Each structure stands twice: as structure tokens, then as C-alpha cells.
Length: 355
Image (cartoon, rainbow, N blue to C red; front, side, top):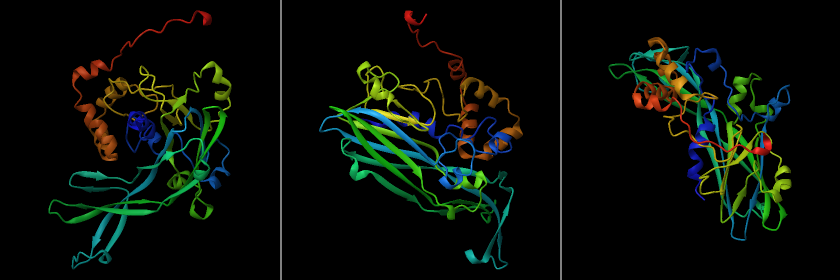
């Protein structure tokens, strides 16, 4: 088992929808997050009329032996509120925190760069290893907490004096991972992983979605890996296991095999909030993640180059990840652009029975 094989695909899932073209905060579609796989507090979901959920459930089949060991990894983003402040120092200019006042502003310019408030994100992950997939009763429900926190990054002028600050704050995030297994027949088990948001009513100060996101798990997904075992494809199960595959109940997520298809590796599963096929791959021609759903690298890259200088400046100042997209695109050599134009990877024989 090698969970590193799934890392590139999982990274793309994690940041899908993080920031959309034209990658500027002023763009209407970037003023409200719409990531896939958001697990909200249950109390907020109860007030909604849509499909918002507080939990997601993965079920998949695995062939095991007495020596099989299971690893479960849960990943998601936690929203971090980025605020911008002007720093007022006392007349004596003493370097004492109590002598300073934060004056939060809509924008602040320092050393030629404009800083703006926004919702950033930090990666969170939980890993549970060396599990016996035939007996998960002792690990039936594991609760976790990421406590609230705050960091202050000071902005200095040309003389090195602190004149402003980037204040990042995040709320307490609580949840649970529930693991269970059920024997289907000799050597075959159905695994279930349920991830839930346990934030309570008393933690929510507002019913506005932007505020509720601070207590939510964003782009949540699960990775499962086995040693001395083998997962069964739910998309193309063997004929004798088709009924068992049909009985798997996946809620808000789709488990697929990940790894080397040619080698028929079946020891890793990615359970994604985005519908994927078995053995998904990042196109080798892609120079990097563009975050935009149903992205077409060539079109987005060319469109980025057509942005005005002011638009590029805003993109560069919006977020470190979007700045990296701009710098990567502007430095992309011509031969790389030619590779984005299209590749014929192979032809699939027509199934005569479907004609």
C-alpha cells in the first residue's frame, strides 16, 4: 500500500473550487465559496431547504485475510478569516502589544502591495492506521477537535517600521469519524466510514452561510488503503460481487480505485465528493492546479494572459495560491502551451452489444 499515489488526485479534489477564474476577489463568483463536499453544522442544515449536509458516508468492499491491515485518512479544509488592520502605535512608540490599537480596514497598502480581507483555508487531516478491517468495533466512533486560534503577521514600511497587520482567525472545529465493517461472505467485508460535523448551536453566532462556513469542513474526502488486501471496484465489480457492490450505500461521496491501472493495483480508494472514475489521473500536460471546476487548462491559461495589468495585480494580491497560478502561467514556455492543445491517448474498441 502506498497512499502517496493518491496524493496528487486528492490535492486536486481538496482545492476544487477554491478560487475561480478570473481569480479575483472582486469577481462576483469568488465572493461566495462553493466548494464541493462541505459538511456544515447539523443545526444549520436543519434550517435549510436544499441538500446541505453535516455528514458524509463511504461504503466499499474489500477482500481480506487475517493479516490485512487498514489505514483511513480524512482530509478537509478549514476556513480562516483573513482581516487587514492599520496599526496605531502610541506616541512613545513602545513595542508593547497593549499600546497598539487595531483599526480593521477594507484595504491597506504597504510597500506597493494592497492587502485585502478574505477567507483563506488551512489543510486538516486525520489518519488512523493499523486497523483490522474485520473488527472495527473498538474504533467505532473517534471524535476530534481543532481548537480556535489566531495569528498576526505584521506589515512593515520601507524603514522597517510596523504599520499594519494581517490577522488570521479560525474557529473551533469538532467532528467525528465512525468506522465499522460487516462480513459479506468468506474473505469479503463491507467497510463503512462516516465523517460528521459536531458543531453545536451555541457555537454559531450567525445563520449567514459565510459565518457558518467558519465551523464547517470544506472539500471533505476520505482515503482508504489496505496492506495484504484488495478493494473491489464499485463501478465495475466482478459478476459474482455485483449484488454486494449494489448494496453499498454512499452518501455525498463516490469511492473509486486509485493507483496504477496497468498494474491493476487495488489497495487504495479515494472517496471523493466529486464524481470520478476508477484510476483517475491528472493529465501529464497540466502544469498545475487551476482550481476551476471542469477546467480546461489551455483555455484558462490563455485567458489569464489576456487579463489587464490591474486585473493581474488584483489576482496576485488576492491569495498566495492564485499568485502562484499567475506566475506559473506567465512563465510557461511555448512548448508547454502546445502540449495543452490536445492529446489523443488511445482508442477504445466499440462494444458491439451496445451498438
